[in-house]
Length: 79
Length: 339
Image (cartoon, rainbow over all chains, first blue to last red; front, side):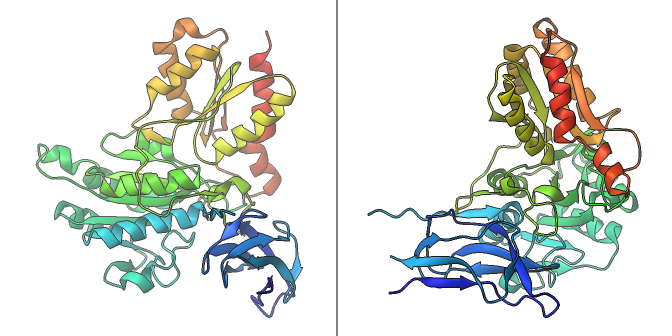
């Protein structure tokens, strides 16, 4: 399987960027399928990002760094 | 290759997880409060629970704190284990008769025959310009009044374990969480608000402080968000050659006096950091505990870094000046450690 890019979702049509407010898995850490990986937010709209499959979380963006909707916030390399 | 799955939660999610697990294992546990159901609690402490347990056990209430806290007291004396959420601790004024004359005293009034196994959960703390009726901590006010335990978590692990212990406790427990440690995106982000949390239910004993950081030169006793301020200050002090021990009380009632005395017995210097008001509060109680129990160990007069006896200002610069900032803790520690 190829790695999956996890993208910043469109949280609201009022903002073009979102931020990650908390990472639940460290850089290089392992996650299970369906596990909470990150919390994201734009203005005061927030959402949770769950892992689509198990794997290793890499290329995490920084906390509170603006990321455009549709751009990756991390990548999950399958087991 | 072995892969160990990490599992971290924010404090907000750790609280919700503790409540969900106890509701799964004990049908008598339920929750009620303003906006705790559909909205999930304005600070997310009951997020996702309505979908799992339905509106009979996750109850949105009208804006009548005295009504629903009174209903929780009634349910508790009849054998249920309610969790009532008072949205902001600052709102206690409209419901104090239920909290203090009923929740805290019925066990005594009944000669010990009636138990009140309820949790009153509430949000506290400032730092985000919410003004003087949404920013107080007030834990000292409740700790002053006999009859209830008062719990204040500072980490995600403790938040879950203390909530589990509070729900299972046959005494009324006031569970106060500081808004600044919940891991909420719209608050000042505190990276320590997210931490490893086991998936299963577990208890953290109420009444036992934890040593958040070991040190030799001085003891900083604190609670809630100020644990993290003190840990930040301790890192700065470490660079200056001052080794600070940080004691996270985790509960004001019961107060772990032995844990405080043991630490001051080692360091000989005491600082109390409390976001609550300066006078007649936790800082005075902790200092008195040491003066009464370890006078001979003190090598310097104790100091305290607190919020002055003024309403919490709305103005961001004034509020930041009033709260026990890392800079104020560092400055006070430098003085305490000198000579």
